Image: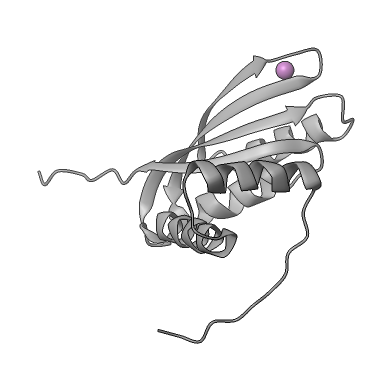
Length: 140
Ligand code: NI
């Protein structure tokens, strides 16, 4: 087992309260144990497909459509990557919020990159990439 190191993190009080409730409900012995498992699970999920593999997935975005440049940036990024983006579903959630589900297909590394760029745009509240499948051609 490798050496244990300590580091500190900063987060909003509300988020910390939610995290503490999560730790109690899931009966983690310590917050460190909870963080360790969460990081481990996240990295394991991310690593299950190789970068070069052809995969299919969805990117779910929730964003504020009043942000002036955001819609243009989202549109441009999607039009610039028609090789990766299969389809987009848009729902107007409230007067301010939009939900978009983008279906992607291509090399896993490229899907992760375009997902990171889309969810990194200012005004995007949530962005989650799910790599759903590794389509395999059956031999002819
Ligand atoms: Ni909308």
